[in-house]
Image (cartoon, rainbow, N blue to C red; front, top):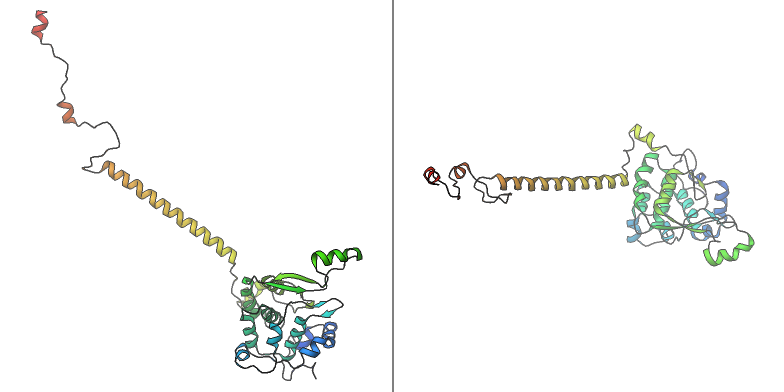
Length: 284
C-alpha cells in the first residue's frame, strides 16, 4: 500500500504518474532505506498551512532538509531528491500547492523539486510560464551523480584534490531549469516530450519571450542616444549664444581686436601730415 498511487489521482500523459519514473529506478527507490524510513507517511501541504500548523512531517520538511539534487549515485543508489520526486508523483498534490513551492525564494532545493515535478506533469504552456522566470535565479546547487570512473592509481589524488568520488558537483538554479526546458534526460529520468516554444508562440498560447540581455543592450543604446542628443543640444545652444553676442545690437564686445570704423569716421578722418600750399611751392 505504501507504493501505490493515491486514490482519485489523475492520469498524466495517459499513464499512472509514478510510471513517469523508469521501472528500474522506481524499484530501487522502493527498496531504499530513505524511502522506507522517511517517505512512508509524507503528505503534501501548502506553505501557509505548514507555518501555521505543525503536525506530522510533510514533504516540505524533507525538501528543506535536502543538500543536493540528482538521480542515482554510487552503485545505482537513488538520491533523496529523486525519492521525494516519486513521492510527489504518488500523492499528486494540487497545482496551487506546487506553485507555492516554486515561488518560495528561501528554500532553493524545494524550488528545484517543484520545478522538476512541474516539468514532468504540467502542460507545455504552463511549464514555460512557470519555469522561465527561474532563469534569473543564480544560486548554487549541489548535484550528486554517478561520478567519474577513475583508474586505481588516481583514486588517492582524486580524494585529496577533488573529493569527487561520491559524485558531487556544482551547478546553479538557472542551469538546472535550462536543462529541464531543453534536454530530454535530467537527473537520470527521461522527461516527457515538450512542445517547442516557437510552436506555442505561433498557436498563441505563449507570449514571445523577451531576452534580458537584449533589453540590457537596448537600454544602454537608448542611454547613449540620450547623452548624444543632450550634448548636441548643449553645443547648439552655446553656438547660438556666441552668435548673439557678436551680432547683437548695442553690444560693446566684438570678436575682432581691431576697432571697427564707420563711414562717417572715415570721412571725418584727417591726415596729421603737413599740407603745402601752392604759394609756398612758388616761393620755393
